[in-house]
Length: 377
Image (tube, rainbow, N blue to C red; front, side, top):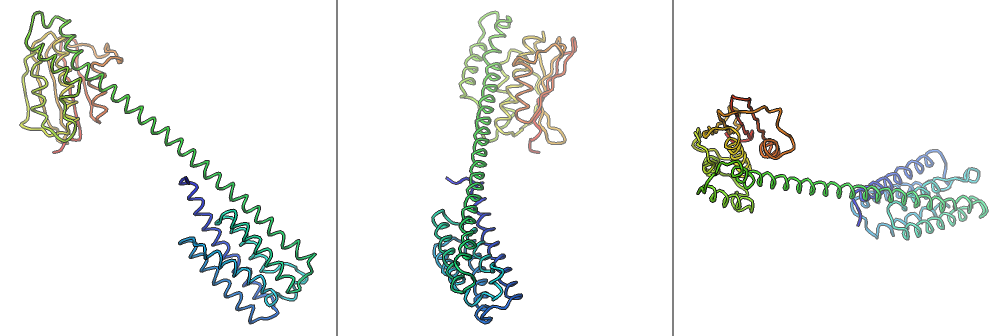
């Protein structure tokens, strides 16, 4: 299968081959026509004009669509031009031994190697070489001992042209292979990144739910059988299994927030708006972050009341605030390796393009602000 780099090189090879061929053939034939006196001026003029007209037509048609009949007709035209040396050659060519026909035939032989298969390029080189040698002998420019060495150089040019084209094509294929390897590495990196994100999200969800519930039990929050504890454990199991969170679309943050934190064993002072519509994934992250913050209040603050508020800034961002007047703590003492403040709050909001800000000091309570900046006004 041809890659993009090889296709582009083939396209450029075709373009430059047919264009340079037309330009070189036009220049050498017209300069020769203007500076030399051919044996038959009228016929030479007609041959040169017809040849250049065909070169222009050939270039335009080849660039639009490569059709087999173009190559057949092209070889017939070039053969005719080579055989017409009996009229187009100038007498002084006996001395110079290089005519415009030889220059045109040489560039055409090389051009064929860039826009044709190996077989077609070889056949074209042999046909053009035979026609040029025959035309040179018929025109009596030189005898065979002089015509053959000069004309045979076209065969070497054909081989060199084909070799150059093969090197260019190999370079294109090598570039395609490198590009494909790079794309594979990028795909694997994207998959690995997505897998790590899923793992982080799962660990954060586990921390927010079952782990937080078990830690509260271990801390003695539930010293006896509590109805909320079994209900909370059932909800934790549903969250871990992915049965509760909306997958897509937009949802109202306010009722979701009430439902998620209503069973946390702490009294809530609510300061909410009537309705705040957000993408589901953002609302889930805000709700889980709020629950994590309230769980920390239960475990560490030493108070049984907290304040939860939802506000919208002048810029349209949505903020969820969780405040308590408990013990507080030194932020510098928090480890960056756990899934509490770092994993469940800060990293989760950062993955969504939002932020989590925790403010606390010993004896002055704790304030957690969760913000998503892209909310609709």
